[in-house]
Amino acid sequence: MAFEQLLSGKLLSEFRTIFAMVEIYCKAHHESGADGLCQDCQDCQDFTEYAHTRLDRCPYGQDKPTCNKCPVHCYKPHMKAKAREIMIYAGPRMLLPHPIMAIRHLLSERKDAPGKPPAECSNRHLRIKVNIKD
Image (cartoon, rainbow, N blue to C red):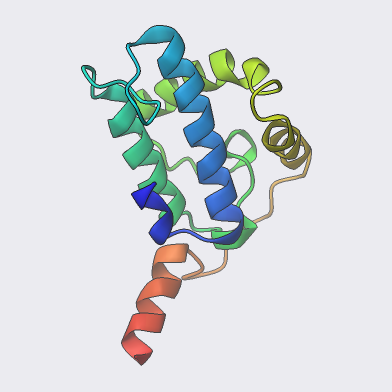
């Protein structure tokens, strides 16, 4: 996945989880291609790119809570509805193909959401700071 170049740590793990869920959803609802996402319909690919951007710009950075516990709603309403639809379908089906990923996600959902995020803590801000120093 070319997306993985910008994310690291917990954000990369979160992206891999949502990507796996999108693959499961897409295989059941669309004609999937070689990479697991549909070729004809651009919805799944657009959603994956959107989720990647939102993770990169998450104000919590590496301390990101799961989206349903997060006090900051960074998804647009139609993308939030799409994420909910994907997770409702794919969440229970994650246990067989990706058991460790599914259990990690369930455990992280049990943690309380942190308070107000610190300033300039997002992955994007940290990348920009590193590039400015170089």
